[in-house]
Image (cartoon, rainbow, N blue to C red; front, side, top):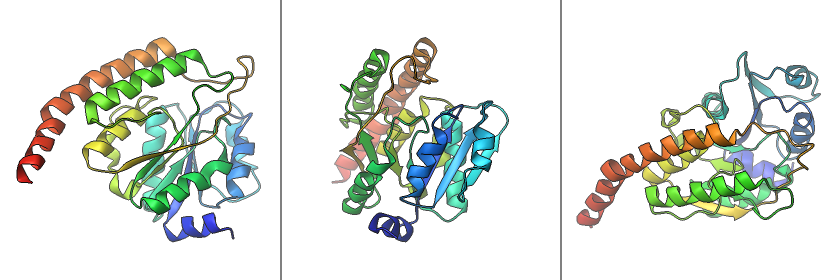
Length: 251
């Protein structure tokens, strides 16, 4: 057993892989994760391709959570967190199943957690990588700005799905939204509840547009994120800012 696996076992860290119609990449991603840790939870978010069969035939033990209809990444994360907690895990690495994240970079997140126990660790992507969709770059900058407004914390990549969550400190009810924007929501609520947020650089791979499988819908998802940001700004004004003022007065 490698040092990373031993530490993950001792700190009760599992890996959660939400997936939706990524049958072309899911087996490779899981095989690479398995070389690092055997504690893998896959949430099949209503895939209607060959994902179910691939998970059945993968050839090594997995914990699989499945349901018939696609509910969105936020819902998948909530299911994954609840399953992990029920299995006794306190922390979870989340990684996308489309191959953009490198499982081999997981020790980078784990080492950051060693240095900052109890923190939420974000794997920050190089947004200047070849084939990085321009819409994603703009959406990320937009998200980073509003996250800073809502929390007074500056982050470089609030939309990265490669993270280590201290799930024993995170309430699944914080995830009100069910889709793509839930990851921003989790960050904001974590900051509001005094969870330390750290970031480390990781690699990212984006295939050419002809090969890419994406579930990001620029117009619709951007609209949903805008609504969420409006609500979070109201929350910052009426909850988080008064909380900060109260804490400063107590000191």
